[in-house]
Amino acid sequence: MSDFSLSSLMMPAYKPNTTRWPVGSLVIHEFDAKTDEMLMVVTGYDDDTGHARTLYAYPEKQPAVWRHVWRNPITMLHAPERFGIEVPHG
Image (cartoon, rainbow, N blue to C red):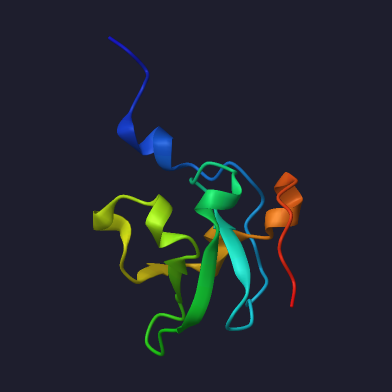
């Protein structure tokens, strides 16, 4: 019998984020590949849960089923610069 469990896949890999990103910020999700194609844009926050509403910044590079609003706890949304991803400004 293996010690592996599906729940082990959901363990945070990084220290939880505590920043409440301003709307328009580019972020990277905890479990996404750390490439610029996986950047997400914060579009707002849910009043009831406080989760950030996000969209992939480059939807054309994502499967069609991923092209919708995602709701993520801020603990899972990190600064791209942390992973060496350059963020366009301006």
